[in-house]
Length: 194
Image 1 (cartoon, one colour):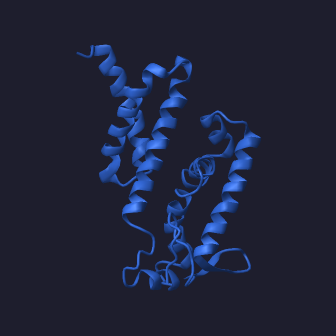
Image 2 (cartoon, rainbow, N blue to C red; image 1 turned 45 degrees about the vertical axis):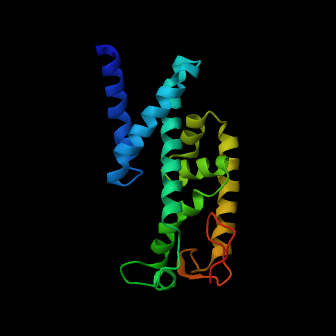
């Protein structure tokens, strides 16, 4: 039986983590991810050595569960999976959905396929909107180390996007066109689409 103080502590933790998770996953998935986070924490809690680092550790476990959830979701719904019209939608420029917005919808799937340190760095800074300093503190890394990871992660992300699609930019560097390459690689697989 869990005592009242422990129930209150888990309840307080749940109240802090739920909005953090809800901003990063679909509303229907929030409780599932939260449950996974609490399960992971319960399993790993005996190995936590420094009680003062509980807060950053809890958010690190949460971010990891969110990334794993997004990665699993990306595998279930592959990018440009060959469904009729998907390839054309990326190449078209709609008034309501400019090419930049269309391409942005796929970026998180490409980020989720990067090697771990770069995936974590870009998820925190580019997708979650943390500053590089905040991200460095959260993962226990120096600011220069985080800057290096973000820079290298951006290079890897750009390479992956360019391997998949021809991306046209205007003079200001904004995306004005996106056309899948016939031999482009999809994130997470060695196959080519065409």
